[in-house]
Length: 455
Image 1 (tube, rainbow, N blue to C red):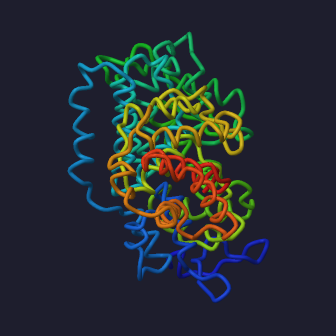
Image 2 (image 1 turned 180 degrees about the vertical axis):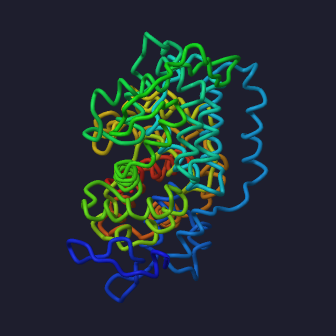
């Protein structure tokens, strides 16, 4: 069968959403288009990343992000923190280490997807009570998040964090607990409307006997409910593994994943026919996420102008946008507390449905709070500082030069002349302040623009 990029498909609208984006004089593959891709796939569009995309077409750029680059020694130091998690029993250390990897990674799409899966498989450390179990779940997101979804699904739902979070310990023959079965169908694989209450009850029976033993998954045979079970119209002596295999075979699974991935990487309001096309890609790729994203991130859908700047940044997205745009580093535990102050306590989503979405974040974290936090970080106050600090890098520049350098990193497509003039006027009012304070104010002003709200 010909690959997706080599086939022509018809849709209800007559538009091939998943065909590769073909640059033209009207819609070039220019700096703005590449910056859009970087922000969605890598949190930010710093100069070094834009340079790495030079000479690549949209398909090659998508492949670049899916494949990633070898990690640095600094990144590997944070991976090494896992060795102490058996003795350092602190979720802020686990979350901070993860944020450090997000800051320093040379494979940012892997971390972007890890954050996506953390929302999809929302699990709260406050109930799990074992930070090392939460770290094992994050490791699954990092290692398998771009691989086959069936493998990731099995690894996550059989992990001790999820088993504790959804009370699998209490699910036994004769006394089923439906929590894991319900969320497995509703939130992880099929979505509402694609199953019945009877399916949930039978799924709970299939999952009986799943246990945690010494921090690992175990199967207790005597607690398992053997016998025929009818789930989604199929009757068999399902156990947990057979149930997972059944769920990922359902057409609704690809549709459900396609809708969520499109919302996360393309933006809100993706047309239904485009979601269906991407679901077809997922099915053809056997639910392999990375292979499917190579198609999505190079598609006409992804580069449709309506989706640029349409996705509201979460607090973690916002902080990583600042750090990665500046190609700077912020101490990870303070970064964790900064995100929490803005309403996103990593490893502790509010409920099984995950984090707020879209404009709800602007209510959770008022924009003035984000701007104030950016200024504090730039001045080296809590939760900062950034390394290297702005004064070391830009303290010898004039205000005009500093504005050009900072805005070029945060907004590589450029700002309007009116906004540049207003920012410069505000900066000149602080000309008598120490350079560190003046630069911090300028940085905070840049991070308070409406363009900083979304990506």
